[in-house]
Structure formats: C-alpha cells, structure tokens
Length: 322
Image 1 (cartoon, rainbow, N blue to C red):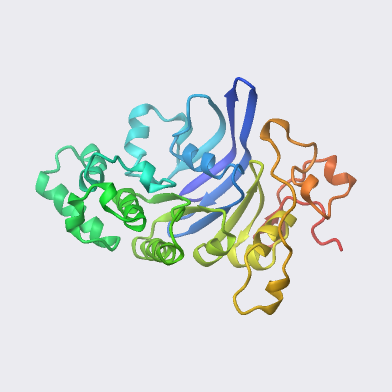
Image 2 (tube, one colour):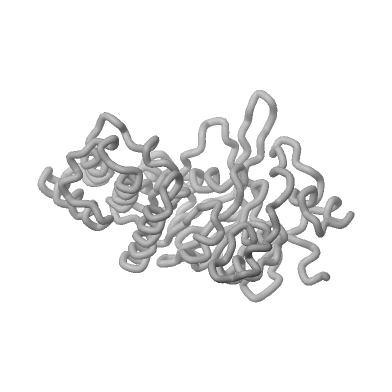
C-alpha cells in the first residue's frame, strides 16, 4: 500500500473497568494526495476512533498496534516534538460538532490564529491577521467575522470556522469527522460543496467520515465501510453505493432512496437488530446475527477482506452466490 496516508493492520482497544473494548480491528487503508476516501458505518463502528488515532488523539486508556504513516512517517512511534510538528501542519482534523470543539470564550479569529502562531512563532501580528482573514474568505465568511464569538455564529458558520482552522497551516491531509452533523439539509450541502472545492483547489488528501453512504458516494473517490471495528467493504465510491458486495454495505445503501426511482419507495424498511457489543463479539462474521444471507460457515470463520472485483474488496464468503 502506498499513499499520503497509509494505515496497516491498525487495532485500537480501550481498557475499561468492565474489560477490554476493541474499537478498531486490523484496518488497512491508504489515501493519496488529491483523493477523498469516505468511511461509512453506524455509530460505534470505529470511524471516529480511526480518525483520532491518525493524529494520536486517543485517550491514555487506548492500546494501539499496527502502523499509521503520514507522508512516510509513522505517527504511532513519533516523539512528542515530531507529533506536535505534524498536527495542523502535516495533517489536521475537523472535529464532529463545531459547537463543542470551539472555545466559547475566545473569538474565532484567535482560535484560527493559534495553530499559525504555534507552527511559526516568528510570524508577525499583521501576517497572522491577514492569513486569518484569507482563510475565512476561503470558506465563504467575511474576514470581519474573526471578531465574533462562537455563539454569535450559526451552526454552518461555526463549521466553516472549523474547516478554516483545519486549513490554517496548509496541511497535506485533512480528516473530516462527520462535518455536517446537526446541520440542516441546505447548510449541509453548502459545507460539502465547500470541502469538495477545497480538495480540487488545494490538492489535499481527505478522509471524510459519515453514516450517510449517499453523501460519500457524491463526495468521494473511494469508500470503506466499517462494521464492528473492521472494514467489511472497500472500493470505488459509485460501485460501493450502487453495487455493494457486502450485505451490510448493501443495507446502508438501501436506507437512502434514489430521487426519481419509483422502486426506491418499496425499499426494505431497514436493517433489523443492533450492532454487537464490542466486548462480546459473536464468533465468525460479526454481521452474521443481522444478516439474512448468513449460513453456518459465516458463524464459524472470520471472513478476510479480499478483492472480489478489480479494486473492490469485501469481507463476505457469500459474494457471488445466489
């Protein structure tokens, strides 16, 4: 695997008083410059843990193995100084929920300026102020909004501030963890269009996390679908959405009706059951208890993620069977 971001055999387990909780299990992913990789899955599938681990933001209770390389350097073995230099400058993150990520008692311009000052202590006040205004205008806000506090901005404006902060030091990689959470449909479309435009203009690599497979199909080059901490399907975005190989990815896709498609009105009502408790994962395929196509062999062995079509892999032993 090659790429701007290369993740190999990544596993993250949280230690709790009730026992170990495996959140990410043996994940392999890669992202190139100028490419958008979408990661989909229900809550608890390991998406956010994966994103936070790329910048080593996981809590001290996490036990991590495998490797995470950004531009060739392994984040998991970096010394503190190297890690500090990477964050915001080499790779940055747009956290889920800007309302809870921004400091409510500091002006947004000051918060955008912070990574600039950290990575270039010699920068003058005029230089920083000019860059903050440039970033705000880049994300569609007037430079004057730098003087506002977070509560004076709408949800969409706060999310734009978070994106501006993520772009402040011109990183090569941006991780966007459900950047449109709690936004209305119109604002969501604007934020997604903004992200798409920035990828084209700046050539950054992006990991876009969402539970909405239809959004990822429009935004991304490739999609990886996660379930119970594992990648169960990965391939070209249009193929994963329109012609899923894994039953779970197919269920996610069917949950979003196609506009103008009369057949979509009669789509399945939803996926029965709930994701498994990561502390008590079922034997074999973790999705088997919810899968209408499961057979005895599915409950006996963990299916490997294997290429079933050119560039399209799935972790399911029944791909191609009637």
